[in-house]
Image (cartoon, rainbow, N blue to C red; front, side):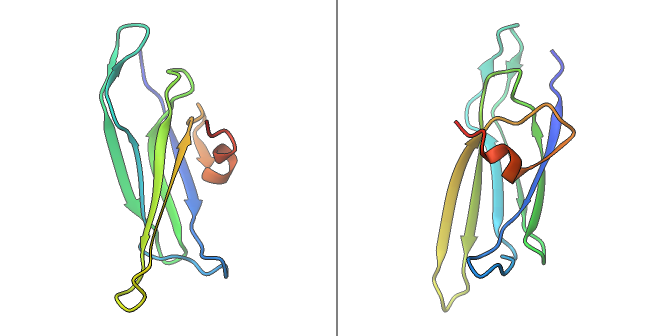
Length: 110
């Protein structure tokens, strides 16, 4: 079975619509598994950080056909004076498309 990929992208901003720079975005499947056709799909993780505009992009395994979800974690640590640390996990099914914005697939979360 050939696994296809999809580039998933988005932007992280604070409540005042200011871009969050340097936030970690991590996507993973925590455990390997055997697909129904016998193909072993290993656990994996990919990570990136947001740029000066709060934008991020990850190439992820398309999961629609394998009936698995990918967890995307947004992790932001503030500066040393604010001691702010925020983390939010989303479990999504990655579509079989070339690109998708996170906001368009987050509504498909299970």
